Image (tube, rainbow, N blue to C red):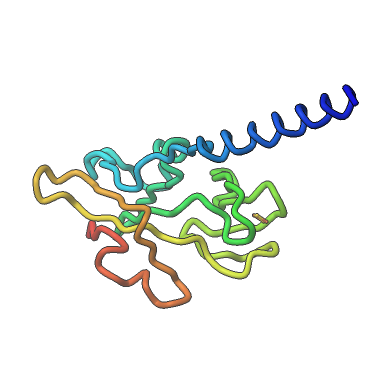
Length: 152
Ligand code: FES
């Protein structure tokens, strides 16, 4: 009889614990999607990794434009690495590879990296990026004026 009561009490306590846990869920604090990325003149040609860790974005400058590539593999969501010696992004999970443009050329991923919205602030001329707004190559959206900053 005592054993039954102990079992019942333990089960009740476990049930109550899960109810309390439900009332206080683990909240994941994501960084804001929109951020100021500095003056365009601070970006030289190539891939800039200064925002990769905090915001998951590479800022890339080529001879005519600056664009923001989202550092999320379009296969299953791992974070690729920029390999300057090979001039490509490479995903460590299953080997997908992307050109500096973000277009995929090897591995299992079915599509290019996504680009994030980018513009120059009218207040101070600094680069603004909003990761919540995406531009997809396969939908022809990379030519959208908010998908890049024209530099030449
Ligand atoms: S998640 Fe990048 S190759 Fe699979």
